[in-house]
Image 1 (cartoon, helix red, strand yellow):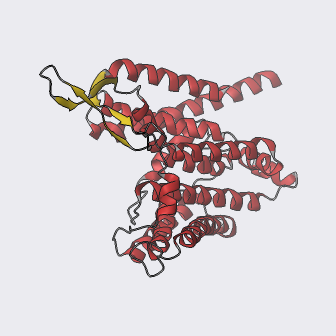
Image 2 (image 1 turned 180 degrees about the vertical axis):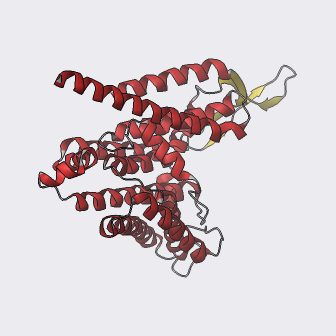
Length: 361
């Protein structure tokens, strides 16, 4: 039901942006028989051959929608992982720093096997090693967060606030603040693959795969139901035999894994990484999960809701540009959306408690 409401919001936003954004003139491209694309040309009234153009809707065109999907994918993947954390009644402020640390470590390994590295003869091996290292670091950072939260008994806000600085500091020291590039081809070929129309869809496909797997896990498996139980009432879940500590560690590791996967997609698409990657992503990712229906008090949320929450926020951010609003207002608007989503969640909880009391009476 909640996902249906989010889908309706996406459709309404799309219609508003389609009508309010107007149209724009842009170059027209054509696909050659060998699969390459080049600028199409046309004969002008003067008889000269000039570059061809076409008028398209600013929002509702294939290139913009593919760009929207790509921009959303990095946040959506992490928002799905953050949903696990929030549903369990926890919070992770370090997810952007984990993203940066995974990104620079994988980039460093990729550069060793790139055109300028000493191991350029084995780019496939380097890509595999980079992917494994990226995922391993993400899981390790999540494990560290989970163990400190459960072992020290300190609120996750404090723990992850500290690790947010630690992980990003490690990334900065490892790179000395420099960007890392010159990667081998395999990862870039996979992530940067384009359709015959010149659209890059791999980030979207990865996001869909992550969302489906996470949705099945949360709704159809016993460990997934344990996540909801711990977030809904930790004490009651302990009495029912659920090991709440293990569940908490698992959800933080899931968040770290999601950050690692997003970092891999980002590396393959942009072909570079730096310690500043993911700066401020914490707000965007948490906002996506909350807008998608995850309750900050725990016990409620879904993977599909998180993905659509990320899409809604990205549509708002892109819409600011499309309709010509000053981009300096984007953070203000995103903040207002988050506050509105939290207030709506509080109203829903109050209404639910009131109905339960009425039934009990």
